[in-house]
Amino acid sequence: MTAAAQREFFEDQGYLVLENFMTTEEVATCEAEIERLHAFAGSLAEDDSQRRNFQIEPYAEVEEQAGKPLLRKIEETRKYSDIFRDLAAHPKLIDRVRTLLGDDLLLFRSTLMLKPALHGSVHAFHQDSAYWPMDPPSLVTVSIALNDSSPDNGCIQVIPESHKWGMQDWGLIAQDKDKPLTEREDLDLSRLTSMPLQAGSALMFHSLVVHGSGANNSPHPRHTALYAYFPPTVTYRPKQGGAAEKTVPVIHGMDGRAEVTLKAAVAP
Image 1: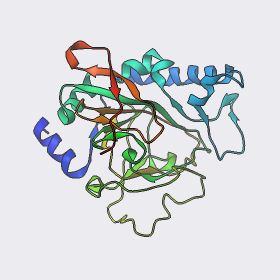
Image 2: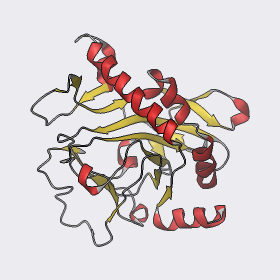
Image 3: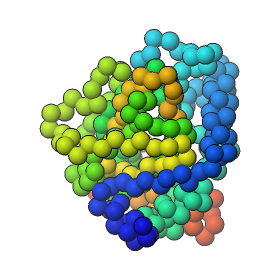
């Protein structure tokens, strides 16, 4: 598929898959780094402010698994890992993101989403931009599979073309394993599509695409690195009481600058 065809497909359907862009060695390095980050999380004191970036599975009956913290996600991974900082700028990945957004790329989010074996909770249907202070809501979220992702261990499900629905309200994302992916009766699920991925592949989707993932009832974890990219044409527009500015990394372009500080825009 040509770059123009990829962009056309993304703009129409709201998602695009990049298959096997990482080598097996790169995937193994990331998995080892996740083990290290689990150990780091376990070493943090109760009153350490860094603990807020290491979220324990909220609905599990235990907080540890095989001697490690039972983590749901790790936020701001760039602060804790050179490996996941560099993965955000992987050349094969960025070439594809540039096809969708242009040469100047900024990074809004750097996260590890973790579904522990037998304990991974439901990720209820939502749109990313409903929770993000960025306007217009035209970011590209990239979810990189670091091990094989399937319906059994809670792979992502998307509703194609739902980025054309406009912004909606969604509520709490993290839900207990027994909860449905949505309780909304008005949601059209007729085109709901599961997106299984092999380790080293990625799902890219518009930040207004409705998506979610089921519980992990399998004996295998599901690890994904999640990044959200945006062009400099997007404005930082926080809610009342939000920070007056936000500094974000530059991933590509912007005349080689390392980061950009966005000033809060006043709501119209």
